Structure formats: C-alpha cells, structure tokens
Image (cartoon, rainbow, N blue to C red; front, side, top):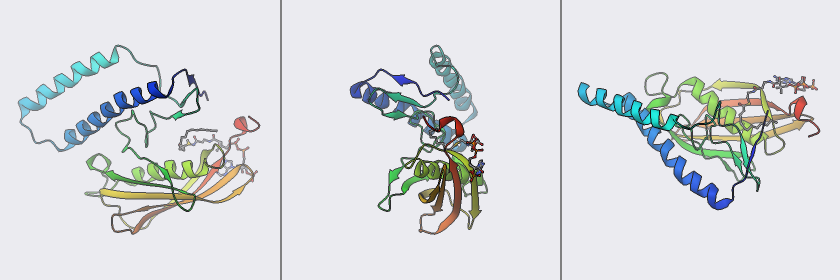
Length: 207
Ligand SMILES: CCCCCCCCCCCCCC(=O)SCCNC(=O)CCNC(=O)[C@H](O)C(C)(C)COP(=O)(O)OP(=O)(O)OC[C@H]1O[C@@H](n2cnc3c(N)ncnc32)[C@H](O)[C@@H]1OP(=O)(O)O
C-alpha cells in the first residue's frame, strides 16, 4: 500500500480543493437529475452527447488507477477518491466527519435519490458503507486500521433525507480496536447499529 507525498503548500491545496470540489458537486447533481429528470427525449439525447464530449476532454489527462491516499509535505491527508468522504468523488454523499464531544466521530449529511434501496429508503449496503467509514475513522484516531469485521443490525428503515452517523472506540486489545456506531434518522431514532473490529495490519506493525 503506497501513500505518496505531493510537494504542495497550503495555497496550492486550497486552490485544488476549490477547483475539484465544485466539479464533484456538479457531477453529484448530475447523478441526481439523471435519476429524476422528466425532460423530453431530445433534451435527454442532447444532454448525453454533451456529457460524452466533456468526459472525453477531462479524460485527456488523468492518473492511472484510483486517486489513492496522498499526503502533502505538511502531513495533510488527501483521501479525495474515498467512496464516502472523497472531495473529488461524485458518488460520495460526501460525508464531512468531525470529532464529537465524547471523543468519537460524528457526521450529519443528506442521502438523496442516488442512495435508494426500498422505495424512499436508504439502501442497506449504503448504510454499511457509511458506517464502515465512520467507524474506521473513529478507530483510526488510535492507530491506522483496516476493517476486519463489521456487524450490523438494521433496527428500522432509514428514510432518504437527513441522516446522522456516530461512532466511538469501545476498547482496544493489542492490534485490534473495537468500535461501536449508529445511524440515526431525522427524528433521532437509531436505524442501524454497528460493531466493528479494526485491525492494524501485520505489514504496518513496527512502521
Ligand atoms: C494501515 C492502514 C491505513 C489505511 C488508511 C486508509 C485511509 C482510510 C480509509 C477508510 C477506509 C474504511 C475502512 C475500509 O474500507 S478498510 C478496507 C476493507 N478491509 C479490508 O480490505 C481488510 C482485508 N483484510 C486484511 O487485510 C487482513 O485480513 C487484516 C488486516 C484484517 C488482518 O490481517 P493480519 O495479518 O494483520 O491479522 P493477524 O492474522 O496478524 O491477526 C491479528 C489479530 O486480529 C485478529 N483478526 C484477524 N483478522 C480478523 C478479522 N477479519 N476480524 C476480526 N479479527 C481478526 C486475529 O485473530 C488476531 O487476533 P488475536 O488472535 O491475536 O487476538
């Protein structure tokens, strides 16, 4: 697993965030309207062609593979391709995850039409995706970890719309960090609860 360091200062970091963040926001809007548009056939055909054209231009210069986890020289971590919180990832909701008063992690976000499973409800896999990330970030406040086991209990449906995720470390046993987390609906009800075991991998021990 590689963690490249980019030779950029705070101004250049801010410039890139201001450039790529709005691009991802725009594509996220495009994903939403692709699901929900009721425009006429000519408009849809024209839109598809224009999107193909602009995609071709963006493809002229690109990195290979995923974006990866990159660092600036000053240690700022850029997980911009991350499926849940990536600044450049239009399929990420995206989550902004913050430290909670209890030392755990917390995020308030909105899941729209692109995250639907049953009608009007968040897909169960999306609930797992979000909880994996937030629990993983809580675990990583202690040491860098990968998910070993994540167990979920779907207590009640999670409606599309505003959702809160929380996670905190329950205990640490050697290389294993045990984390508990929850998703909440807009009324504050727990919809999904999670228990995770996050592990400092053998290859990373002693680094
Ligand atoms: C350092 C990484 C940093 C990454 C930063 C990314 C940015 C953030 C991105 C956020 C991403 C969000 C999150 C993501 O998406 S993380 C991506 C999803 N997760 C993975 O891909 C992990 C794949 N699995 C592995 O790499 C290895 O199997 C791991 C690392 C998990 C363990 O292999 P390793 O060789 O290291 O283990 P060991 O044999 O020395 O055993 C050590 C201890 O652990 C116990 N054990 C073992 N396996 C499991 C298990 N599955 N459940 C419970 N316990 C398990 C084992 O019994 C032993 O305990 P004990 O018997 O001593 O008591």
